[in-house]
Image 1 (cartoon, one colour):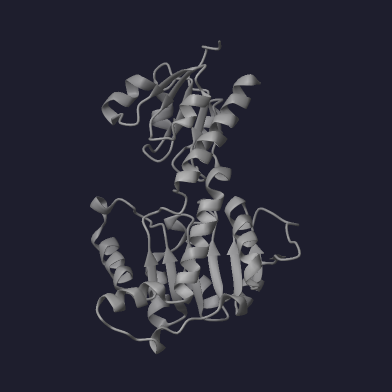
Image 2 (tube, one colour; image 1 turned 90 degrees about the horizontal axis):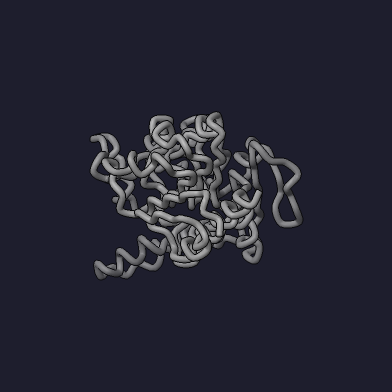
Length: 312
């Protein structure tokens, strides 16, 4: 029985993860605090986490034996991957685990936007029965532009296929991915043709606030926008300007630049109030990748990657 690795799990995870790692020494501490984390990291060789910790170089230096970091999620923006890899630490995420969950929520939010579901539901609760003002738009007659054609973007394209809409996709880091129902295009082409922009990129220097005044200005049509990627991909002040001018017809936002409600700056609070009161905006609390199914899949994917690494 292999026992040469000590595995520390610091977030709530599906029980299947511990089952798959039953042959190893696993310290499952989802309630661990900052005060006790440093000591726990001293002899850890494997760290499995979600969003509890910003794994900076300072924290990495507190784990001298660390060899593997696994994140049960798609993004790696809360891990200093470059520094970790410079120390010989292997870093893995699990975007395969929640790609369907995020893609399904994107589709659901998109259909809700086009059919005015949140607005109509709120009005009926106030005894307002207004059919004409809540007239919808059919997806099949629109052009969907997907920015980021990784696990989620490609899965979303599959889900869109039965609706008969035209699907365009742009990815700065990929090419030759187009097929019979997805047209691979440049960003300029996408901006010229799309009625809908949906964002599925990781957060990095090139995607930071990619949706800004210039991007919105370059859109040929007024458009709907969905962000189920990372909050800092969209400049919120420019999103609000676009909504006010009518260039942005509606927005579905699952992520924010600051998702800790107790630390919002006055400006961030003011922006969130505006978005929450705008009838053409749908807000959810970063739940696109969270389903009962994806929690299990994430655990299975990261366990598989860890076990493969340990076998090698």
